[in-house]
Length: 348
Ligand SMILES: NC(=O)c1ccc[n+]([C@@H]2O[C@H](COP(=O)([O-])OP(=O)(O)OC[C@H]3O[C@@H](n4cnc5c(N)ncnc54)[C@H](OP(=O)(O)O)[C@@H]3O)[C@@H](O)[C@H]2O)c1
Ligand SMILES: *[C@@H]1O[C@H](CO)[C@@H](O)[C@H](O)[C@H]1NC(C)=O
Image (cartoon, rainbow, N blue to C red; front, side):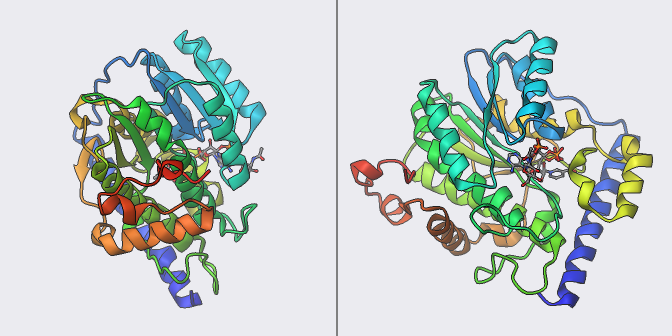
């Protein structure tokens, strides 16, 4: 990226954020947000990444309140144990637990999946929520640019490794669900397949928006593969809105000041922010429905380019190479069953 396009990326992200905030403000003035009704989910199991804080924490708490067995996946053990304790106390649901998973490390993700599978429990809901925003130029353990590596590739691998369990756990009329948290910034994201790692002039804004755009493309391709296999698993993207969380710690100080002073008014609370992901995870209205982008609990169109199947497929292929997952797209789309040892989309 050139310095000029980095500046343009920043402007586009702030303009997008301002537009969403304005829409939220308007909605609040016109009567506010109405809390959706969520049906009870007893006996079902969820994994939520980044459940220690913000939207992820609110999502865990809500799912626990609905009676789900919730596995909180995170990279800060002390914080996560505190989160588990308070969710248990508040919801009186003792099936809430923490499993260590650093999404910035492919090895840690593989270990997490290994530990989860050893429990021999089903998996009905995977919420790909964890994320970082506008961090300084850094690399993950595997050398990927952090937004792309953690927000996107980490969830790409995690989902692929858990697909067999999700497929076994979904049933006709009661699909298992992959809910991937994206963001309105994806609308201003740009994805150059030959520059996924933001080489050149680094734009933290551009890199964040790109990771959120990649997650939408991933969701649609995943849904296409799942549907082609006739599996009882769906994949959707959820956009929480602009939410008052710690995600903004790396943004421009002026924005942080606005958040500090007016966040209670302009931003959604973490609970409100969790409504769309939770809705996408549990509502009967979305039973069997996948490949959608949900915002304010409603289906919305995502950026035009996200519907480009060639781009989806190409990004998926490259992500497979980057994470060591076998790309079974050609087999599945040709209606062939992948060979036994490759029976699922996983690559372990
Ligand atoms: N807030 C918004 O306005 C907004 C808008 C659109 C989309 N979103 C999306 O919503 C999701 C949640 O964001 P949030 O606003 O709730 O932010 P947040 O409060 O900063 O929470 C982010 C979560 O991700 C976790 N995380 C960070 N690095 C991790 C790693 N290496 N491994 C595992 N977990 C890690 C954090 O855990 P620790 O802190 O314990 O490390 C934390 O629990 C993100 O995907 C974000 O892009 C947020
Ligand atoms: C978790 O990961 C994030 C993103 O890489 C990092 O900033 C944070 O320091 C990590 N937390 C711990 C406790 O290692």
